[in-house]
Image (cartoon, rainbow, N blue to C red):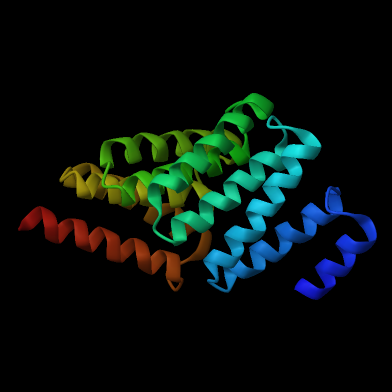
Length: 203
């Protein structure tokens, strides 16, 4: 991959949208292979090129910040991930407003980061915001909405609000049963989550 990229840069130059796209795609492949440091290097290269080509307030720049945040989250560098996601969120809100797929995805990632930072109140807020947008975009009976309900239940469980956690977990389960039926991994996850909340409540 690197040799092909070097050859491309030699022919077309570094400050080129296609060069940025190649760094970006390699970064995503490396992230999927769990080579987080190498993925970050590629996404930083992409970001640098896009900032020089487009400036800060551009969809591709936001996407680079988002991918950097994903790699940082996987590396458990939660504070850096939060900063990257917040950069992406700010640009995406300026470009698209709040009722947009990319804005909801970023809210979800901020919620996950806050959860790992043990800031459960804040995590709950961000997952609720993601849910509200997803319901507005897709309706309640959608996989993304179910995912948000499940994340909300996790936060509520950590906050020892077990009744609310059970209610949110049940919402996720009901959606998943309608979408996937009983014999599906996501449905099983919901049953497991509800069982865990019931155990915590009864302790």
